[in-house]
Length: 256
Image (cartoon, rainbow, N blue to C red; front, side, top):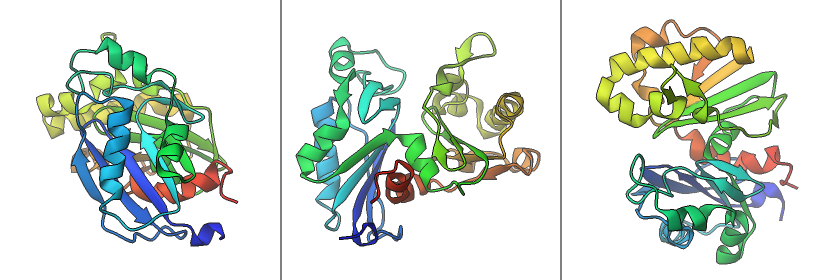
C-alpha cells in the first residue's frame, strides 16, 4: 500500500477540546471533524482513551497523527501545559500528573494502543503542515488556549522551541499575554491590538517570508488589525490542525 492509499486518523489536541477526523492520502476528509471537551484531570491513559472514543465514531484508518501542546521531542513529551493541571488551563498543577507526563512516550503508546503506525508532534507543527508552501522561511503562530509556534525553512521543520514561554511586557509570557483567558478579559478589540504588537515585535526577530496565524482564535482578530498586519501575514483556517495530519508524515520524512 502506497502513502496515497493510506487513511490517517488525525487528532488535534487542545486545552479546551480535542478534534479528530479521518483523511485519505490526498488530504480529503472522509468524515466531518468531530470534537469532545478535553477531560480533566487528564492522565496519559485517559487521553489515549479519549482518542479511542473519537476513533470509534470515525471511519477505519491505517495510521494515526496526534498534535498536542507543549515540547514534544521524537514523540516523547518533554513538557506539556494544561494536561498537568487539575482542572485544565490556569488551574493548580497536580504533581502526580506532572510526573506521569514528563518523559511519556506518547508516540509509542498510541502506536501500541491502535496497533498502527503513529506520529506525535507539537500541535502547531501539525497545524503548520496543512499550511506551508515549502518555500522560504515560514513561521506559524496558533492562537488558542495559549500560543503555539513553529518554523520551517524551505519546507524543513526547525527544532522546536517554546516561544510561548518567552517573557513579554516584563510581567508575563506570550502564552498568557495573548491566551484565551486574556482574550475573554480584554474583549476581542483590545486583545487584537496585542496580536498586532506581537507581530510587530517579532517580525525583526525572525524576518520571515510568511507568517501564518491559525488556531481557533485567529478568526477573532478584529478587521481593523487585520488591515494593518502586513502582506507577509496570512490568516489560516483552524481546520489545518486536522488537515496537516497527512502532510506531517511527509515533512517528517516518514511518508515512504
